[in-house]
Image (tube, rainbow, N blue to C red):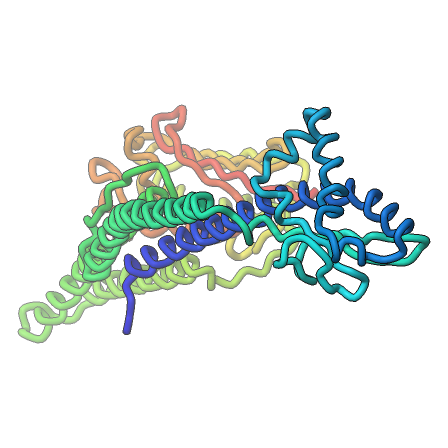
Length: 460
């Protein structure tokens, strides 16, 4: 038989409460029986110890207990003086009168544990105190335990107390059961809500959310679930957008190639150097897109190969800028270099850093208006090397700057698809910088264009 969480929680708490009630009942009964009654029996033992000297003296004089067997009045004469002394001592008097019939419970046993005189119920199980004469035990003064001669009314009172205690315990169990049931229903309701939301999320409903509820562990779990759902929702939107962008980027060059080839096949156009060059440009565009996608996928999963060694970032930056100078000149863009004179040594992969700077310079060449400028510089900034690549107009609106490093994102107003970019270059740049434990940010340049700042940690 399988139990649900509610039943398990209910039974667990109920059993715990029942165990506490049972332990308390047993403890209270033991306290009553061994505590209160034990106290009364100890009082009886104290009284017996005060009679012992009289009995020892009488035995020493007579030489045996025969005088008590033949005349019980002698026994009364030995015990009565103790009661008479109790009358003069308030404490002893209270002790003597606190136990009804105490005198009738007392008796005497000889050395062989045979009854001599007194209560016929005394035996080896009675409360006993030895009577010692000249180092030899000659008898025992004994009394029947208090619980054995407890009056019926007193016994009835104790039984009523034990019954009341049992009823209190059962009532406590009932209250505990009700409270446990309410607790289990409350907690399990929230758990069921989480389970249903999880099933909806697993089925693809990324808009599924859970009410936070109280500020406890379940509330924290609900908030974590909502954060996960929002992350999955964002990832799903990004995936859909990524697929749409990929299909668009692939469709454009493929459409151009198809049109060129069909025109040649239909005899509308002949295969010329111009048409071949146009198709070659589209193939190169497709190849660059595929390469960018490959690099981006590798960097996203951390599989892009890096051979990090101490390298002067200024030297790599200057080499990348010089390799782009001719293309920048062809776009009527002035290149301004401001490289630090002292080496800026970082732990990096020279090939990937060259790719990083090349992508940024290509971005500036592609999106900067003619007759503009591109400024490239690096300097020491605390414990990091600061690399700056700035260009002139057009710029990027401030509300779009933080999105520049997202894949396929481009500012449509000026830095648009007409320039032929895939929108993956800056995303790859961000991943390369992060792989070097660095930071890359975008802001407006003082010449009206874009300013890219990169900080890479120095090793010396």
